Image 1 (cartoon, rainbow, N blue to C red):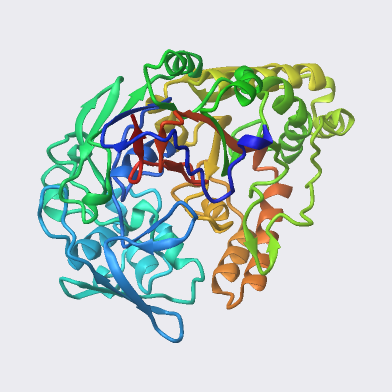
Image 2: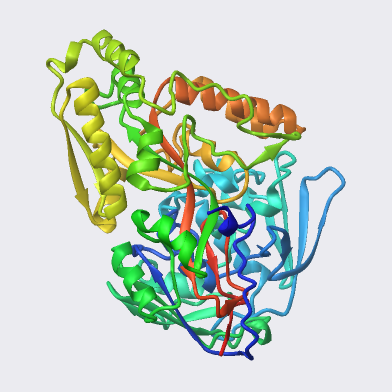
Length: 526
């Protein structure tokens, strides 16, 4: 399978069959449908493919993982690293209206308005006055301004080495005030009002079936976009999607069934392994019995065999996760995970340790363990994973845990209520830096979906953000992760790779380690 492993920062397809490059139509299968495509408010991974191809911000990432100009043609950073000034190019919205610097000011202040319900408002807290505005202070004090239609400037509280990478996240994308205010809840579900800045625009939303795109003629680099039509077809079952791929009905699929990975890695020129900065984990609700007991949480995490799950259940090349942050991100000359503690966990099950922890919690040999429900979203691979964990808990701890699965559109709002006992989640990086994982567990974060809170953790994260050099920042983040993991607030399962297929007739497509498939430069040979 190594021959198909693509570099960490890119999943570019450079395949060529010697044919003539031509404009055309491409159909790509996605397995899940998001409920919301608002770049300013959503944090859903399933929305990323749509937003990533219909919107761009000041900058974008190229296939090599480098920051390149997008709606901004250039920028300057002050000598102290605090003030950024961007000069916009002559860009237009997908309806032909000019993109203005004031569109960014509106969009960012909208994200910082609690009434908007943005899930990633904290990503803008680096800006002077932003966090205070979210807490109720005057939004006019936020250090963002548009001196004219082509100039955007903002000032940070402290130097942020990864600020340009952050600007590629959807929360920093512009949105139009006239469009949003006319239909705040529905503008992203109607092709006529889903006005973006990216290489494609939506021509049809077919709920439960597909999203259809057409080339955006008003995109600033429209002459570089080859595809005339792009369709994201919804097929929840990866086996059904694979059958469509092998029948030639679709050009690419975002995932393949785990049992087929060994065969496809040998037989198929379309099979790809894409590194992903992502961790799959379960969340324990520390405010719900019996998960309010540290030893219960620890026992449940110690009792699973992560290696067995990967090898025999997932049948993948994923790696066992003993912490929150995945490998692949370097700070201060070291991978963030180098030398990391295992927090009492192991790749295989520590049955004796798990049983001892459960007994210390008051449930020797599982006796008297209360009714516990593990909720998840409908997904054949994930449900198979949870069934394996359920069996391990029964065999190793003698406890019965019930699994309940619902469609994502129902599941995610329930998780946000934080009334569950155990929930299946995970996180894929929004930007290539450990803070994208760690920031979620700060007290009060909109993405703190188990309401875990620890003052020492918050202090370490604040110190990491305020540090003037990478090594010091890294050390504070490592300390924060240790606090989280030693409290066993989450049950880490595995660090992810993505297994997908794309026709070798397609060139220029790439899928980032942040799990966004990009079709801007995709071409099809005849």
